[in-house]
Image 1 (cartoon, rainbow, N blue to C red):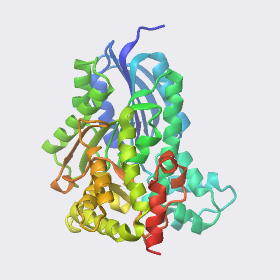
Image 2 (image 1 turned 90 degrees about the vertical axis):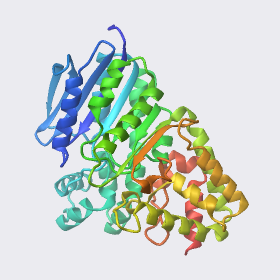
Image 3 (image 1 turned 135 degrees about the vertical axis):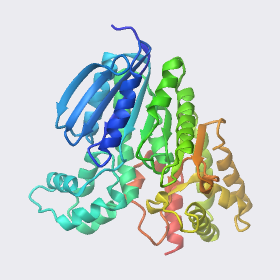
Image 4 (image 1 turned 180 degrees about the vertical axis):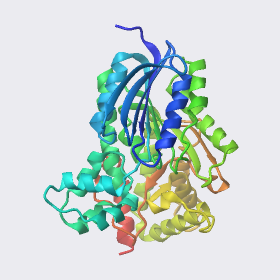
Length: 424
């Protein structure tokens, strides 16, 4: 058996979309860092011309390359197979997996193809698929999820299923299966799961993968097209290969925010947070207590919660002057919600106290939250992780949300139902 490295890291670049050029840039950065005996870097790149997987050698050189031709990088089994291919060749003390993509990327042609697979014999409406490709619900990570979404026969039900809450719910469940299968294969949890994709800094995501991942790094907002500064991050890992997941996760947040502070993206959306999933129960228990307190007193707190949501949206959008993605997709920063409830004179003493406990659970460097950073003063009150809070009257609560472990194990789903019932 080969000697174990300190780290083996797979960067899985699903760039069969309009990010192909950026994906190639990230791949080149990783290639130029190269591997050492202590840190092995592998990558999969999938673009319009086909896919290949790599093990990096000396800086600028490939030690092993396999051409895959036409490849479905949105197939979760393809991801599992690629991770097993790399990790079995290069066993390590710690394993890292970075998922690089839109967190979406569905084009009308892709939706048409998958719709045909999901509904054989049923003619696909071109106008419908083009409309869906622009909807928030098109932000799905895995094609198997898209197949499941498109399978129902009633257009009305498909439309409901295409809200982004459903997309995230199904994606998250699939992601848990993927990380679980990889962790089982290497006989230990993944030390680090990095989400180089938009909107994945989500409590529901963290909770779903908690048993198979030690540290999660993600953004609750959009990720600039340039993506992570891999050169900065992987040079630091190369220099200090003995660092563990908590240390590397904090470093990623620091290097990411520093990189974009020096090079602000046009949209201004820069957030990144890292969470230690070993301590995630501290966060979840605090949110659960707040959700339970709200659920039993929604007749009092329904209007308060709605006011807090409006105030949060106004602050983060600078009174509507900037586009803010989380609100389009019904994801809300936990810290902003808790701070608003704690500060409201209309909140009960119990809800104020539970809100403060939730805020305290998101103090960087203490407990679960390893680090959090952002660019833009509209994010100053954010905690770094979002949660699903569908505003009443816009759409119904995602039918898939109840499938999440977070929804089953906490009072959050119960609170959501009570919140919507309050306005009916």
